[in-house]
Length: 188
Image (tube, rainbow, N blue to C red; front, side, top):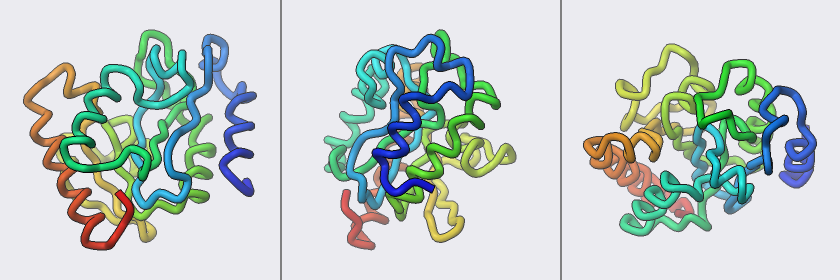
C-alpha cells in the first residue's frame, strides 16, 4: 500500500514488470483531480500519450474533451488513467500479462483517489476491471455497482473515431454520468 499517488507514480516510472517498458518514451500514469468523485479508465497510451506522458491527449482525447465541453464536464475535476501505463506496440490491445502487471498500480490509484463513479472506456477497461464475462456492447450505458462504487461502461473514444454511429451512445452515457453526479453533488 502506498501513502500517496506520488509514491505510486515513482514506482510506475521505474517499472519493468513487462516488455512494454522497453520501448516507452514516458510512462503514462494518470492526470486530474486526486480527490475526484469521477474517474475515467481507458486502455493504454497511444503515440501522443507516450510522447507527452499524459493520458488522452491524442485524437481520441480531443474527441473526449469536446464531449466534456459540450456537457459541461470539467476535465480538471475528474481523474483519468489507463489499464496499462506504457504504450503497446502499434497501439495494439494490451496482452493479459501486460494488463496484469499494471493492475496493482491502477488499484492503488483507485484506493487513493476514492472515486464514487468509475467510467470504463472500452472493452479492455471493462474486462480487466469487472471481468471477462462482460461485453462492452451489452454493458455500455448500464450502471454496475460493486463494493460501493458505481461503474459506467461506455465506448472508448477511439472507437468513435472508427464508427460515428457510436458517438450518440457515448454522449448519452456521459449524460447519465453527469446526471448521477449532479444528483449526488459530485464534483464534475
